[in-house]
Image 1: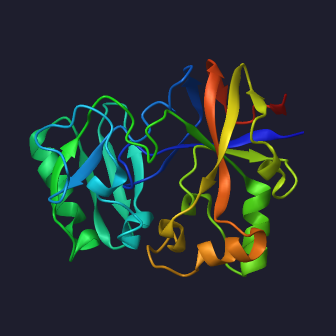
Image 2 (image 1 turned 45 degrees about the horizontal axis):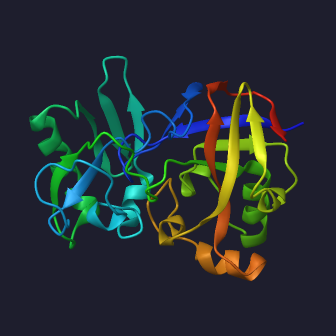
Image 3 (image 1 turned 60 degrees about the vertical axis):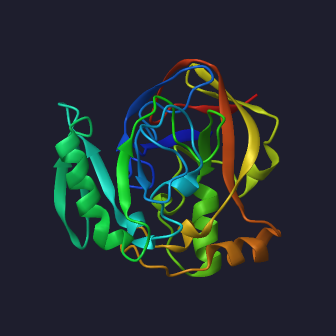
Amino acid sequence: MATLAHIFRHPIKSIGYEEIRTAFLEEGRVLPFDRLWAVATEQAKFDGPLTGWASKMNFVRGAAAPGLMAVAARTHDDGTIELTHPELWHLRIDLDDPADQVKLMEWLRPLWAGRPAPRSVERPGVALTDQREARISILSLSSLADFGARTGVPMSPHRFRGNLWVAGWAPWAERDLTGRRLRIGPAQVEIVAPIGRCRATHANPETGVEDLDTLAALRAAHGDQDFGLFGVVTRPGEIARDDVVEIL
C-alpha cells in the first residue's frame, strides 16, 4: 500500500523548504503557500511590482547559485518566515514588510555573489512556479533511495524540491503514471507530465555544494532527465501525511 510520506512547500521561490503535516488542495491550484514570493534580480524583464506569472530567469534561483539549495524555512504562527543556512545567521522576516524585504535581499548576497543583484521581493498573487500552469509535484521515496544507491550519493528529498512524496511504490514505477489519476485522501490529482530536472539538483541540500552530476546520472539510467511527476488537482480535499495514495 502506498502512502503520503511528506508534504513540502517552498514559500519563497528557490529560497528554503519546509515540511507541513496537512494541506488543503484546491482544484486547479498549487499547494497552498508554495512559491508565493520570489526575489527578482536587476536583470528581471519586468518593471514595477509584478502582477502575474513570470519566468524563473527573472529571479534568484538554485540552478545559478547552489548555495541556495541549503536554505531551510519555517513559517511561524504570526506569518513570519525563519530562514536558516549552514553558513549564515538565522533570519526571521515578515515578507509583507518592505524593511524585512531589504533584510532578505542583503541576507542572500553571499549566496548570490557575482550575479545580477537582488532587486525586489515580488508577490504577484499567483504561484511563481517554473511552469505557468498551476501544478503540484509528486515524487517517489523508493525511486529516491534507488537513485542514491546507483550513484553512491545519499539522497535527500530536498535535492528535488518536491511537494508530495509517496512511500510504497516500486522504484521508478511512477514513470508509467502520466495520464493516470491519483486519489490522495479525499483529493484527486491527474498526472500530466514528468518533471524534467535542471542543474539545481546537483547541489547537496545540507551543504549547498554541488556533489553529483544528477542530470548525467539520470540520463545514464533512463535516457532522460526526468525525476518525479507534475499533477493537476481535479478534486479538492485536505490531505495529510500517512494518507493512502491510490492509482485510479
